[in-house]
Structure formats: C-alpha cells, structure tokens
Image (tube, rainbow, N blue to C red):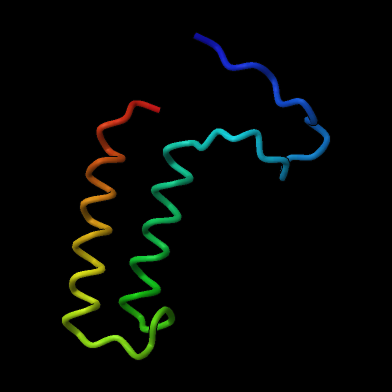
Length: 68
C-alpha cells in the first residue's frame, strides 16, 4: 500500500492529516523531557509529574504497537 503524494510538495510544512510514528514518538519524548526538566507545568508536585510520566509511558507503549 502506497500513500499518495502530498497535494502541495513545495510546502513541506503543509499538514495532510497524517502523522508518522517517529514524529509522534519524538514529540512525546520531548514532552516527557519538558515535564522532567520543569519546563512544562512548573507548579506541579513530584507526584503530579510522576503521574504525567506514567501516562506518557502508556501512550508510548500504545504507539509502539503500530507499524508505521
């Protein structure tokens, strides 16, 4: 199964509604790092940070189930 070419190849930032697995994984890992480094939600307690990390770990596990 092949995917169609993007409708506007001259605009690489154009979103066609599709998301690559590697891009989503990268984004989730950046969020995890931001939470751990206190760049995101600075007023969260350690317990809240731990809960957020666990939720993101679950999201990464679900994402790992997909092939693309």
